[in-house]
Image (tube, rainbow, N blue to C red; front, side, top):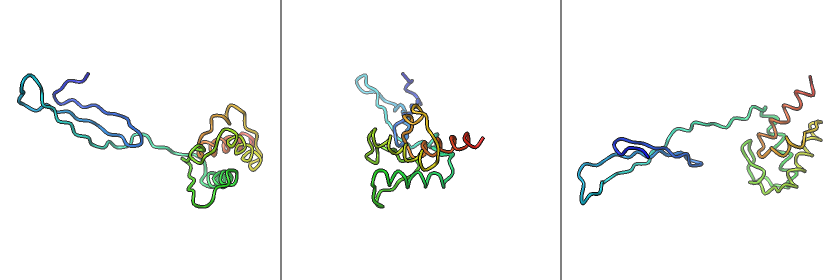
Length: 134
């Protein structure tokens, strides 16, 4: 474990990262040490970025909303997971089929099963459209 004097440990809790700093307080009573702990936020180290074009992401969002019969009150972004929208595995298959039809592509089953977010779907679509164009 970390040494007591001036040690710090970090946790990578989601969605907020925190660091715990321990410092030794002088003066011991009955063989116990008095430690104080302070939590401070850490800057985010990982950022999610979707390399797909914004137009592709918007089109995927529209198709997902249509497939899941979502009203306008639900916010759908590149980071939105299908499960957050209430989609089960059958819904995900239907979403992929709708995307294939809309973009004129065919997605391998393994690739389709790995898609969990709108951004991942948009990235996969752009990759397949690019391959199709070559």
